[in-house]
Image (cartoon, rainbow over all chains, first blue to last red; front, side):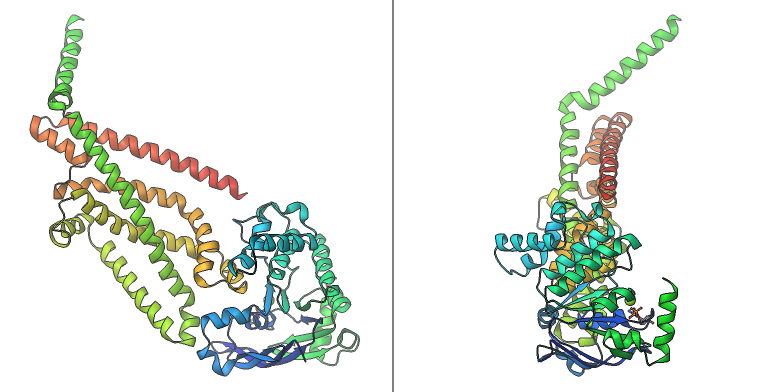
Length: 252
Length: 251
Ligand SMILES: Nc1ncnc2c1ncn2[C@@H]1O[C@H](COP(=O)(O)OP(=O)(O)O)[C@@H](O)[C@H]1O
Ligand SMILES: [Mg+2]
């Protein structure tokens, strides 16, 4: 049984159709990379999975349970949405850490508010996660005292604190200086070994090639090409994909 | 030379006599002192009520602005309730900001709270409600200025709207609007000087009473002006210090 099964997701903003019939599935422990040029709908897809946007059509199932049906979205209660959202974690392009709290509190806040344990348990869990992203010496620091790469690692720890079934990354390194992308990608890689199921929207082709079990190439709101990284990068079938690849590697 | 000196001495003696007449005779300084206390009391409590009302109204209004789209999409009772409460808040803001505070004070004193004999209480309520409308708009601008990503981070972590506001948005909004808020408080201090219209003995009224009793206008009115000025200058300084502090902690 797939951890995630997405079927026929459609999303429009006004008259613009941003997602047209997106379907894919993901097995436990797999890493899916989504690539594609800017404006192709990658962010919108992640936002639909995290219910920051509501798809007009299609279904989302997690562990075999249908958690979202676009045709029934009117009947969804706020609480229900909140609970179902927790199947997913989201790491944003520009971190969105809470500037008024230190690193520890950033990671602890969600499990504390959602009452996922005693204060001691939550703090121990948070410290373990912070150690896992290599920031034990920054527990008391505030976001403004951290580099971009460190901020993003805190954001990853914060998302992991709710132990989501699927962790989503929206261009986690795009806001970083080139020399800082490595440390973040390394953390994501280490999560793969820790058996997390992940969806990573990325422009780092080398990373996608190396880490993914599956790659999806999106163009104009549809999945133009999908497969193993070997297939998609080594033997692209669609003309758009070839054009995109040659442009991506040109820039390197 | 002697003439000039004598003139100065005479002026000084006159001033001294006036001072004694206005403030010492009949312990009239006590009027000023009591008036000042009332002014401070009204300003402080009205300010607190204003902040409380402001936070609530601003939360409702920005919650409507931010969520109405997604709520309208899904419809239901929550949407209509929020729309209704938002409508009430709108009405409140329009009425309060569209009428002079003196008129509001008189309506409160002579009509709505006519049974109350405590003028200071009536003033606290009136100025609190009045100030709330302005504070609400200050807070709303502060909430709107918080990055949209902060709301989304909160929501993606499963917080409900109230938790997102309470733990993430309001602390940040509060920090950005604190200087503006303090300026609103300073404006409030000066605005309370109309309390005398309904017979509340605030600082201004005390000065005016002394003027009426002694037929001496200069002394009491200038004294009142100086007291307001000193208060405002001190508060403005404090706001300046606060602003610099906040800026430093931002980095
Ligand atoms: N809230 C929105 N309102 C209107 N249009 C939007 C909104 N969000 C995204 N879009 C549009 O949807 C398209 C896809 O955007 P996005 O999902 O951000 O693409 P990507 O992440 O692949 O760059 C773009 O054309 C963008 O302008
Ligand atoms: Mg994007």
